[in-house]
View 1 (cartoon, helix red, strand yellow):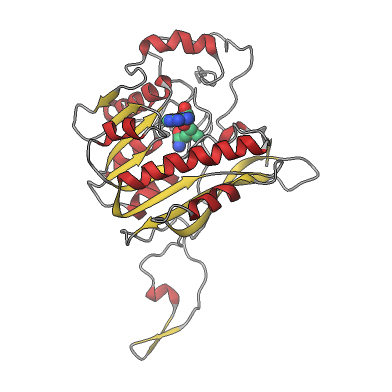
View 2 (spheres, rainbow, N blue to C red):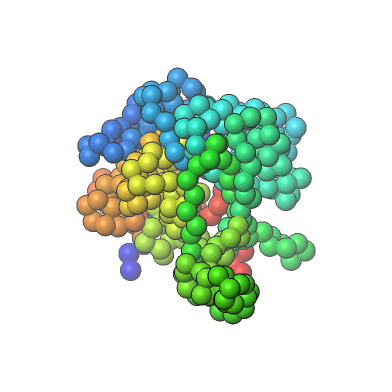
Length: 332
Ligand SMILES: C[S@@+](CC[C@H](N)C(=O)[O-])C[C@H]1O[C@@H](n2cnc3c(N)ncnc32)[C@H](O)[C@@H]1O
């Protein structure tokens, strides 16, 4: 089995310099899908004029945002800066979402640092008048970080807000129902819950335990990335909260999971990242899906055409497996 991963591209400057010449976008530029469906911008998500160029007057039905949140140290000023910055881009999202729309944001709680920034982010969201809080979801990771003296941290938090009265379609897992019971009278007849249900499978609810975290042996893995969300999780959000042909936005593209999900599910996606390398990876991920039907680069990487083999990581470290916001891992 070949094993040809890239190091984390945000941390390896030598590799960044090698790959930047192959990036189609410079800061401020926008790639338009030759098939006319999607756009990828090398843009700052907190800059209203840049996002305005990307949207070009269109409004979206759904936003899925995944900001970098492990970069803040536990200093009150930095936390405040992060929340102020978040309020800026959240308000920009509000301005480009339609009057009946959904807004999802992945945001963590650092248990080593007073659970920041999740609670601060939630409080900030109360100030954004148009968004109503709807659900506080948790996705369970298969690997986590922790010590022998604390509960291992295996959760990823996802907040769901709505504007107006958006579309929502109930989703189901692959897990069959095993529970009988929950009798209820329907039309004078006693029915069991399995008879009343629209599916043989259980719903995910707001705790998702059925989604495999991305790691290098999975087809969807995109090495060089450090915070890739599983496509199954994004598919679930896109399917629940948008209709075919709707416009979906994600202004922290990274590995391009939202764009790929939208392509596969028949939605349009306008996405952006401030880093030209992650913009290029996002475009390449769409292209490899269209050309080869592949979700990523299992044991390989997105720049294999220009860098066929990577002898050793230039940092001298073995590339870390994809982890949420790259914390130290313990195996469960
Ligand atoms: C946590 S990752 C997003 C992961 C993504 N959901 C995925 O599944 O691959 C955050 C991304 O935001 C980008 N980013 C950071 N600051 C940004 C900004 N001001 N504007 C746009 N993108 C930014 C980073 O380059 C990084 O790729």
